[in-house]
Length: 283
Image (cartoon, rainbow, N blue to C red; front, side):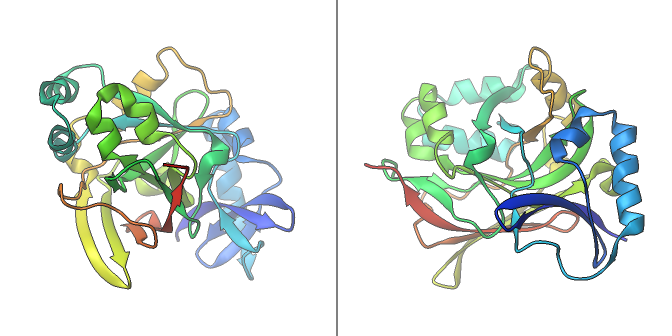
């Protein structure tokens, strides 16, 4: 029986609920609370709720991004295709060879919780960028001890033109309003195992597929444990954190996302994350 953890809009507030198959059980606490306690305790809470789930409609009006107090961080150049894509857009190719091969990974801040959008909400492309792509990624939901609590799908929207102009522009290429989508839910890690996890990406324009690609976390040059370990080396996250693990699906150089497109990221164990695209900011 599949188990997943959802954050739901309920009137003017939100609530967390566990879904077990087609049945639901509301939780009294928050994700922040679950990620602040030992993993065994959090697991017991989720499994108890799954056993007590009953048939009925989703206990909320719509799905929200599956986080509450958690920052989102991201790792880059963890796939060979990602390294090659960075080299395509930049005149600094040797820099990305170094990051791909080096012991220390590239890890950067991606988003505050309030900038993250959920399934069905619009992701953004910057109005001052001319080359923009989605990045389909597996997100690690890590507790305060750096242990893997669960997985979610993520879209690390990126301006390839801004980053390609100068690697020091990475924060502007990566961090802006609606720059990150997560969802549709958190799937507990103990129900999925260590992988590999398949990931597919599609971009639809006027109901027509204009890009499609697939990858698997088996193609990563680094492990989940390695990335999580580096993130926690000098940072603490008392209420947990989401770490995006990089993308192995990079559209070719001639492709850019446009307002009105629809992005679909799919993984058999994690579900489907769907977001329309809008333009944000001023040129």
